[in-house]
Image (spheres, rainbow, N blue to C red):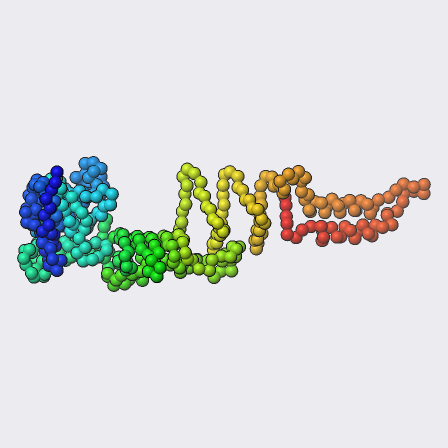
Length: 405
């Protein structure tokens, strides 16, 4: 069924510079819970309540999550909360949940009310509350932009105080700042300093995507609404996907004596097509199958701390070239059975025990005598040579580097 569309526009009343007004017919219907379904009608209204979870007193089913109650910014004055209808998010796939006292666009379609999104009344990121605008609005034709401010009972965007924005939500407009856009950027902004920039390298127009969570201390302390450009080294958590861009990331181990020491031809710049994670901790957890890492040139792991590899099954290392292992303080291998060589069958000897046994053997040879017709013979005439060999055993036969059990 086709519908007519009224396009009188919407209004915040006290922001006359927005050049919008509220259609009075729509307003009176919402305020009275009207049921006219012949028009797509858009208005603005102040959010009075929001259902975020099943703990809400008006929660009935899962469909209630995200519903809001609003009071129109014009004819809503004096409307009791029990008379206000619930309104649903118009898009179930992309929802911007408002907080109390923000102003939203509302639309009536086929007798049902929906909300479209928040009005950026002050251009803030964390919230754009206008407390009491539906209680003390000005007339649509009032050109005095201070009329609302002179009659309101609370101050817009007040931090703290008696204004309740929700059960847990607090006003953080002074801290949360907007990203500075480049030409053509599409930026998805969260309320809490989390952003997704679908942009490009302005020098080459090559695409990139930059996810940032949190802001640097410098951004946090800057003046409200100061736009900033995300810094991958200062932002608490960053995920950057770039295609033709030099990223000046500072590896945490750079400058150390072991920075990429075992890597062959490590990169000196981080450029071209790449995906960069930078945060305080990265957790990869494969609940069912493997974690697989593939690289055409190499894989390098570098840390100020330790590297631990623990597994329940076989641990395999295969290379078609050499295996180089270097350690400053020692290499320790412990296992019930250690096989050196694929088909090794012969056991290793114990060095100290071998020296002891050979020493005992030399002592026995030096003391050797033989029965003769004239009585027992004396020791071998070369016994001194045997003693020299014995003295060499501990000094020359034992490795100073390798030990075994």
